[in-house]
Image (tube, rainbow, N blue to C red; front, side, top):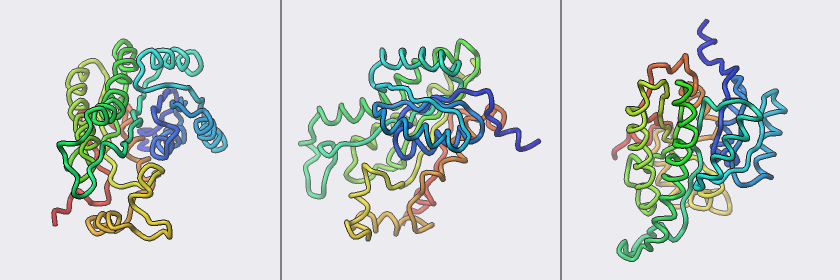
Length: 270
């Protein structure tokens, strides 16, 4: 039956950044379709809250502390997950973010951008957001001859958006790494794809998009004006893409792709 294409029972999913809004929504979606989910992150409070939400909906989940930019922490997390749930067959790399000193406000000088801030953003979004987790969890997937890795890139990785230069460059590198690994591991049973969300309000970007009274900021209004659907995305709207890419039946011939979920933003040039 067609519905069986998306049945994830028997799969174990590790969601890096599962304590955040987007990663958490994807963790919930994977659990809803039957996967046992490990929510990985540094905040136990937020992680346990996400686990409760998954369990209250009838899913299976555990929280596992992990630092995405620390290989030792990731190896320890992999061992703990294997002990509690079994071998990971689905990896979602949703860790990432930006920092104020790596952005360029209007009128600022690119030549004065601190290299330490640039490196920090690359470490968070490329090294911790794709590279290290793929090495650690991908190793066991390759050994098993089966797995799906889903990197969370960004609209900024496709279009060099103003201000967020370091973040955009790092996410562009995530897409490139996704394609490299897809080619590298295609014959070894491991599929590697990316999802590039458009603009989804979350804790880290809410002040950039909304004023305190709930109206749009100038930048928020510009984004809405450039988005054919004339609204921002909701975290649960990433569920379909992540479940599809995670499914070894539904997406068995899909690898090296960047799936865009953006309300039409990237289709609008003027």
